[in-house]
Length: 363
Image (cartoon, rainbow, N blue to C red):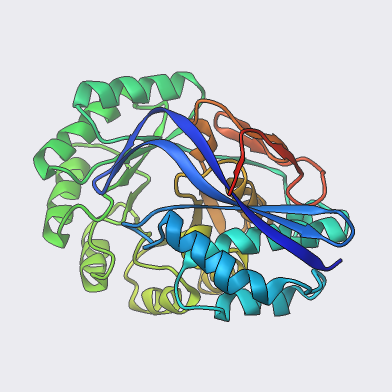
């Protein structure tokens, strides 16, 4: 099975409500889709969002990286040579992680199709059902409380609360949500790099002393402030999770050795795809460090790949933040992984199991 063509498309999907964090506000998914074809007629799919404030990738840079740099290197390569292909992708250019991820996802989709098995079985197997949290965007307190109650009523048992705008108001936001859903949902606090280390410790002490139970605190400080991250981790009872502070395997090793965080958030768009995500999970497992499998604003194309990885590495990936498809007004993908609110189920279809992507605009 050799790669004969790689084409790109644009997938646009409006969100149910605007997605707001300390870094940005978005009202629709607009992702680049990779359509990879082989000489035996099979098709593999991948996807990448433009997340300039996190990965540095824009639509233009993703398109240019794939079309001009990665694509020419892959045409004619045999899908069975997975290690060679992923090495080619990862060494084709520096950074451009989301572009690499989109292509790698399509390659892994075809690789699993080659062996007529769902991807998760080739990655290690496992129970093909996982549970995700849902994001509560930063907003007025009443709106966040209402969104949290609605999410719980829809069956979500974990809420990812976005904060990081105003330290005093952030504390009140979390207290109000905790009071509204106490005993019905776990709270995961995501400051999105919006606090300083001292602010984070102050806020968490305020919440912990008030009896607010939180499952974790995600990326409270700037991505490069590893010392600040460690400062927070050493001084709060709530487990601290690193997100933007860790992209690849080497950074994970350094962070673990420093004991700068308790949990690692793996996102395919940060790691450059599945190959490095697998390495990170294996490294974390060796050190006994938990991981979360997360996503950017992505549709059920790339989130499906993340779900397959989460199932296969469930011994170390103990948490899932794969709510991208749940945030959209509809699911444009037919086949593959089934996203039913908080429950994500993987079928036995080969690869990612995607049959069709409705509304895909070929570029």
